[in-house]
Structure formats: structure tokens, C-alpha cells
Amino acid sequence: MPASLSIPRAIRVFQRQVLRWYARYQRPLPWRATRDPYKILVSEIMLQQTQVDRVIPKYHEFLKRYPTVKELAKARPREVRKLWYPLGYNIRPIRLRNIAKQVVQRHGGSIPDSYDGLVAMDGIGRYTAGAVLSFAFKQDAPILDTNVARLLSRYFGVRTPLKRGTTRRRLWGLAATVIPKGQGYTINQAMMDFGALICTARKPQCRVCALRRTCASYPYVK
Image (cartoon, rainbow, N blue to C red):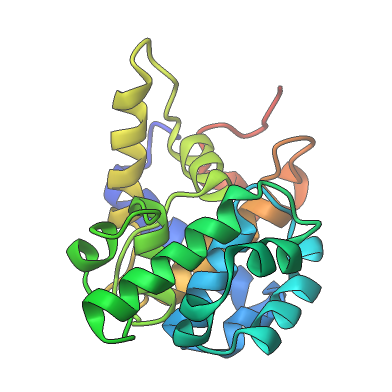
């Protein structure tokens, strides 16, 4: 972070530039056309450690077969796993079906709209809960996937200490702090796209980055 730039101002610049960039370059992803918490949940479980391009056709196929949480809850594990192929990490479809069963049994088929209600279910962690709250229920809930963590750590100059848990807590704090009031959905989507397209793991696009003037890591050198 440039010495002349305070943290509060750096946050304001970050918010403004990332949102402005997203308004122009956002990806037209199918799960962004819905606020159905079940469909959002399906997309988030599918996207775990899997590239977006591979997920899109399977997302449509899966929802055609299991259009509601109740339909998924009734499905046989073998059928769900077979439909999931070839996304890999085959524990995920079983985990998703188990979540569906919990939703039906504990919540009458309605996915909870609270953090505590979501993480109380086996298979839903902090990130997935934040994504559902943010993208389905439009709450100002933070998320911290790989792209967001990389973007925040580079921009704010968060270096990995000996205790990685400390870094993680700080990044979660930043993920919450950078959300403008009432804009959790938009900035979370924006940060994920920015990390995926500009602040990439390899060969980040620093020369065209909208944040380069205030980024603690510019120019980034691996």
C-alpha cells in the first residue's frame, strides 16, 4: 500500500474501482440470473475446485433432473453421483444430496436465510454459507474463495506469517470490511471475477489493472 494512502481511503478506492470494472466486464454466468437459494447452493458446490466452463453445462443438466431441493432429497445417491460425472471430487454430489435431505427434514424444504442455520448443516462451511446469504438472500455476507483471497492479500499487502490461521482471519475481516452497505451481492461477484480475470494466480494483468495505482503488490513479481 502506498505510504500516502490510508487504509480507509484504500478501501474506498478498492470498492469504487472493482465495482466500476465489474459493471463493464462481468461474466454472464447462469447462476447470476437467479436468486433461488437452492440453485445458488448447487452452483457453489459444483464450483468447488472446478473451472467455471466445466460447471456450466452440468449445472443446467443437474437442475433439469433435480429442479427443487425436495426432488434432490428423494434421489438415490448412485443416480446423483452418476449425473455429477465427470466433474470429479465425487463426495460433493453426495454431500449436496445430504444437505437437501437436511433442508427437507429440518426446515420444511426451505433453505435457511441465516448463517447459523446454514452452517448447522453438515457440508456447509463459512464460504458456502456466505455465498448463499449474499447471492440468494442479498445479505452483506463476506466470502473468501481462492480468487477473493488472492486479490485482497495482494492489494492490501497481507503476507503469510508463520501461523496461516492469522492470515486467514485477517482476510476474512477484509472481505467483510470492503463490502459497501447493501452491495454485498455485487462486490462479492465483482471480486471473484476480478480475481479470475485480472488478478490471476499466474501472470496477473497488472498493466491493465484498475487497482494498480493503490495496490500494495504492484507491480506483481512472482
